[in-house]
Image (cartoon, rainbow, N blue to C red; front, side, top):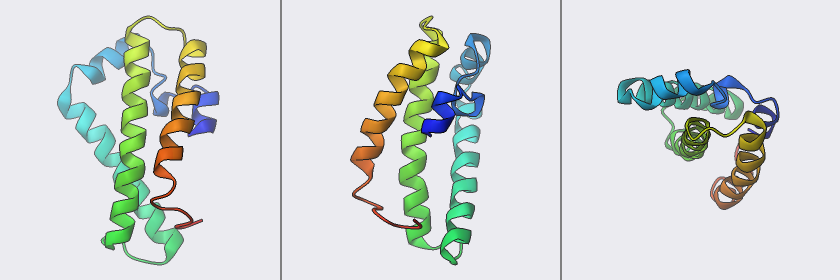
Length: 113
């Protein structure tokens, strides 16, 4: 995520105000976006650990990471819609991402490292 923030990657949420408004105004798009991201993460974790995507540990770790990504994505959208520049958002979200992942880190620890 830090690389995506530094690059102001649209996939991380740096999409501009009109796209952010479209996503924010559509619960269906929001759910679909985050479900697809979590599904891909589950697949990647399963491959990295040599397990199956329906393994409870894989699903749980993907869910935890997906939740942090969802929260950060929403924060980027909120700041975009409030009129902040991408540079301001990147500085804010960079610090918040570190804090969020630091809170999460003890749970999966070295899983799939």
